[in-house]
Amino acid sequence: MSEEGDIGMAARRNMDRRETQYFVDGNTVRKAVPERRPSRQQEIKQRRKRRARQERALHMNLPYVVVLTAAVICSLGICVDYLHVQSSMAKQMDDIKKIEQDLENLRAENDAAELSINASIDLDYIYKVATEELGMVYANKEQVILYDKTESEYIKQYEDVPKR
Image 1 (cartoon, rainbow, N blue to C red):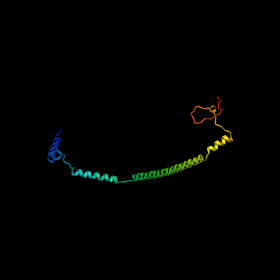
Image 2 (cartoon, rainbow, N blue to C red; image 1 turned 90 degrees about the vertical axis):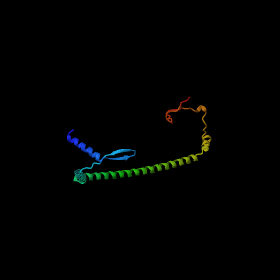
Image 3 (cartoon, helix red, strand yellow; image 1 turned 60 degrees about the vertical axis):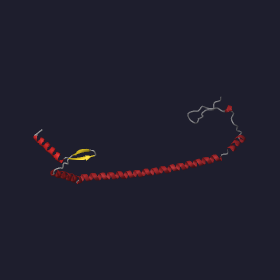
Image 4 (cartoon, rainbow, N blue to C red; image 1 turned 30 degrees about the vertical axis):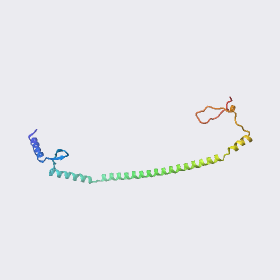
């Protein structure tokens, strides 16, 4: 190292020794780091830089104002569009609820009508007319032909029923 570097280090060591303070934290003693204050010239430079940054931050030229205005208008447009979409979705949800309620009412009416129809059928009268007036009889065991179950729940008959 050069002599200037050695002198600077020695001066710093002497300054550290003079300004060093000790403090107790819990059960250990620690060495406090001395505060280094910036010189008067450095403080002035920092203030000037800070003031220049503030002035630049406050300075607004025409392109900046135009871009800022466009951004605000776009943001407002997006917000209005969002509110419109949200209100239309709420209206659609209300319409869906109304339609579902109407469907439930129609199902209830249909079930009530079906119960009324089933209750009005007199099975004894049907049996009496079928056997006495029309001469119908129950089938014998030999007359019953059973089919194997197919994939669908019903059978389409295109031909006559085969005889045994």
